[in-house]
Length: 344
Image (cartoon, rainbow, N blue to C red; front, side, top):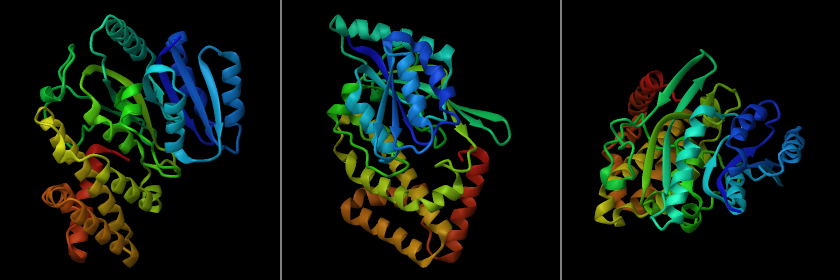
């Protein structure tokens, strides 16, 4: 029997905290499957995954793979999923169980409607919450005023997304077949692939439903976390790799007229990715890093001049100001945004 939803939990040396994540998924019950993907861990992660699979054989499956990175963990989930819907939950994050119960009820209704011949729901969206361990604060990201509520809608019905309210992996539940049909395959040994996971399938989405629930809890505060600023600086080459993949993943200017608003959103999102890569290369400040930044912009200009111009006249362009003083202005703008939005 097909499951209603697959939760994929990529795990690498997650033994210290993965229990909290898993325990918040188990209340979804037998309608759900939880794929614990052990990514070549060297601690007790694999044993913990096997233990859950033994205790909950109708719900949990443990998948062990050679280390391939977060993206390959997600790929394994997509390959092995039996759920009609698909959600990634990182092993250091968790879901709100009350919100999850409401989401399951809504997905159940959409599954029944699709079985009766109605068009399937492609994407369900919820809010997510930044849980800042350093100062004990939370910051919820929702879509009120941007997305319609209590009805199925399409891209023509969306509003304008401000820079602080993008669609992230934390907020999406895709229909599994949408992910497979768009040929999504995330690169191995690369962080920040959640951006590709969200971005590439968007044009294949025809039907959307938004529930204003604080479902996903996004943990911020581990020193080795991928969004830690020092970690991002060390992994800037991986950030650049993700931007290059996104550059060529979708021809946004070929989207049909009914997806005009989606085109605008995707252009803004890609510009943000260019901005992030440009800022962290500027933050590095070495000659090698500045040459990489120059090469990335040159590649974009050669690949798609229209996309290049759009980025130049956006926040990405502000992050690519020339010269030492230009870099100083760019970094000052980044610090101001960091204080306001607390994104890492």
